Structure formats: C-alpha cells, structure tokens
Image 1 (cartoon, rainbow, N blue to C red):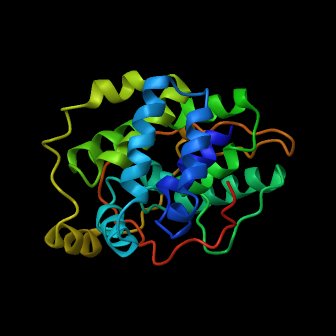
Image 2 (cartoon, one colour; image 1 turned 90 degrees about the horizontal axis):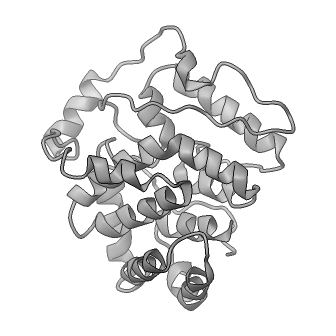
Length: 249
C-alpha cells in the first residue's frame, strides 16, 4: 500500500528530500485510492505545508512538537507500556515480526517508531495492513486529537494520522475524541518535562495479556498486537537526527 510509505515520509523527521521529490509525492497522493477524494485533497494541502518553506524551520518545529513530552510521541509502545520493562520485550517481539517477513531495521531506529512501522506495512498485503491499522487506531486517534490541539504546527501531522484512520475504517474514533482532551495538563512545558524526568521510574510487574505481546507470532505470519493507551507520564526520547533508512518512494 504505497500511500502508507508516503505518509511515513511526511510523518518522519523533515529532510531535504521532501522538497526534492515534492512533485512525485503529490502525484502519488493523487493516484491513491485507499483514501477518499476529499482526503486526497486535504493530504495534498498538508503535504504542501510540510514541504514548502525553510527546512531548518521545519526541523525545529518538528522537534518542538514531538520531542518534548510523551502525549504526542510517535513511538507507539510509549502509549502502551510507558517506561516499564515490558516495553523492551514488546520491541523484541516486534523486531521478530519484522525479521520474519524480511524487513531489517537500521540501527538508529526503534521498532515502535510509527513512520518505520508504516514503512513495514507498506510492503504487506492490504488485508493485513487494515488489521494492523485497526489494531493501533485507538493510539493514532488519541495522538491525532492531541496534535489538533497544538494548532497550526500540529494540524498537518494530525491530518496524516486521520488518513491512517480512514484507511483502517476508524475515523469515528477521532471524531469521538475531538474537543475532549483540551483539559489534559500540558506535558511539553519546561516545568512538566523536568518533572517527568525526575519522577519517571522503571516499574516491574506482570505483562498485560490484553496487549497480545506474550506470544511471538509464527515465522510466516504477522499477528496484530492489541494496543491499550497507557496514562501519560513518560518522556519520549529525542529524534536527534534524520533517520538513515533508504528514502525511495
């Protein structure tokens, strides 16, 4: 599903290739049939916002948006396990899923990073993609709603996540959340970030079977994970540099 790879690129840390291949990206978006005509138009507008302008400004805005606080983190397991020990085992299980299907990771990437996850799914059969996307849709919807609350900087990224929800047939989850998260305490202020670093501790306990992570999938099959939204409280790890994966569309 090529549209997932396009969304992956737009959702990732901004690099010059976004501008170099802007026309090719726009053409591919226009040809996508996994999203509605209205959504294609909105996605093209979001692409223009993300690709135009000064790249250094885009990178700075990206860091301010995603690298401060965990509520809009693009690392999926932060929303499942926070900073608990279970997150490490969940990553090992997800790496096994990737490897079993011939998808090898760059050393700089964490396996639960959403753009990487989407790049993996872009090579999988459509039915499998929709099952995975439906499975992670509660997290995607919540992050999208929070990004919408961040105003103009967060809006194009929220739209990318809304596209994913449409592919999964789960747009109603975002509609339900809109306007309900404005009372959440901000986690991206200097005081909140300092407090999280001081208070966050590794917890040890039994693994949550509801997350579907206790069993590894068969070598020839991807078993969708069952995600739950953990309470906010951990700080995401900064995305220090542009990832080193190949960036062909």
